[in-house]
Amino acid sequence: MRFRILFFILFLVVSLTNAQSDIFFFKDVAGNLDFATVKQKSFKVLEKQILEEYSEAVYWFKVPPKNTDSVYVFKVLYERIQQAKVYKGKQQLRKLQNERYLTYQFSRDTTVYIKVNPKLHGYIPVSLETKEKSTLANNNALLLNGFYYGFAVLVIIYNLFYFFLFKDDAFLFYALFLTSMTFGLFTMDGMLNFYNIPENVNTILMTLNYSSLAYFSSKFAYSYMLLDRYYPKIKKLTNLIGGAIVLLTVLYFYYGNYYFLLYLNLLVFGIFLLFWFCAVLLFNKNIYIKILTIGYAIILFSAIDFYIFKFLGIPFGNINPINIKIGAFLEMIILSIAVLYRVKVIKEENEFMRSDIIQYSNELKTLKANNQQDNTKNGVLDLSLRELEVFNLIVIGKTNKEISNEINISINTVKFHLKNIYDKLNIKSRKEAKNLNKPLNKGF
Image 1: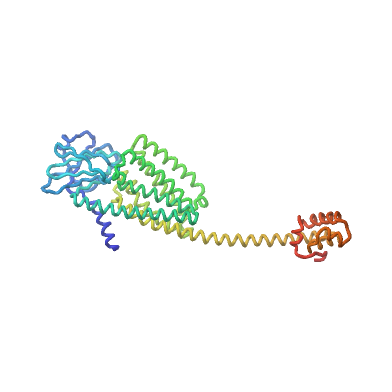
Image 2: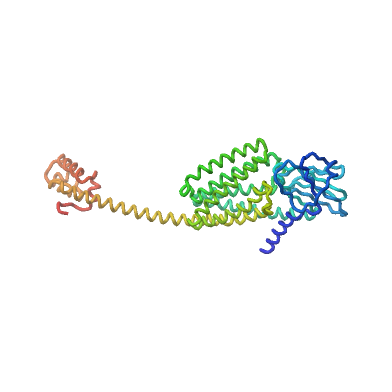
């Protein structure tokens, strides 16, 4: 079963990364060519995916005719590219609806030209497959997505359950952080396009998710690693970065500028890197921080290529949504175990602290009793014989009237002696006098 799953994942990775055969491209640097003039240009074979630094360039793709009856599917495998112009002869094709990525379908009886004008950066992964292969790959991807998102929801519910059970904020904030991360992968998978969410709404949800990722990852890191105890000053830095993230989110909403989104990505990734660095510094504190350091690194370094290097046009690796989901899947398992193990460790620490508190409380009670006894001994030396006689009758439970009758003094005189006794022995009531347990004498 394990080998089938690995083969299935490998098939998906290969199908998404090596499916651009029979595609040619031309880079229109000035961006002023149209369908009629671009035909005269010399196109190059597309050997790898387009990955270049940000520019105002427009990219043209050409699919030459082929002697086949098969229907072909052309896809731009990047959810943020949602518009293109596709020309087949004199006909302009429309994109298919309810697709995760920008998708066009056509026969190969004549040359097809595709014009893509990327708004964010020069990263344009494309694929060209027969309709049968494309359908199979899409169904397999949806199956993998269903498995991943179902597992993520179970982990979120599991953490919320333990939050209500143990009242530990680390569970709550990890559940919210995982929700934000899962929604980010959901948008990256093009699932919002699949449900035909408008492009402007898609952009708003995507960028708002950056802020929630930064916020909930911060809350989780603080509650999990107790950073207020070890690095209290770091909160000022994270608050400053958080404010910058909110500002860049607003600016990107308003201007839609590439650089605002790039800096937003860098700051969110910087938050993740900062907390991972804190975990590295606290690595030897306990076992659950060791587990966090390892688990956090998996998703951190699987995402750096997709969210940072591709924005900068740096060919660091061939990370795609499947690779990121595999990393996120491992991270969920590792961190879920870590958070639960943390509760066990903290519970043991709390039991040890509770035992120390009880012991300390008992010691205080003993010390208080000894002090009270010492004060009583010192106070007895100041008692007159009559006061000592009254005190001993109080201890054995005699009332004022009974004391008056027994030693032949008035009740008012008894009350007078009682007041003096309280002052000299530093007590306030008959009950405290009885707690001394036995009658006293001058010699003890």
